[in-house]
Length: 56
Image (cartoon, rainbow, N blue to C red; front, top):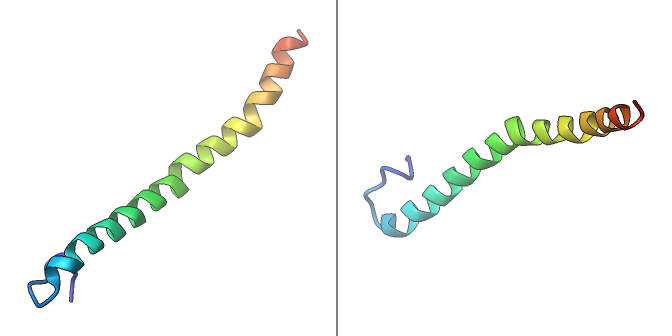
């Protein structure tokens, strides 16, 4: 049974919880796929570029 469509007993408690869980899964997926690699590249690539510009 899908939690976002549930109409049975206890659905009023389960629906907000399901919303939070689904939001967390989407957020963690986006962070893992986009933000984390971008920060990794930024940390690895920026310091050598700064050193090259400084030593010119």
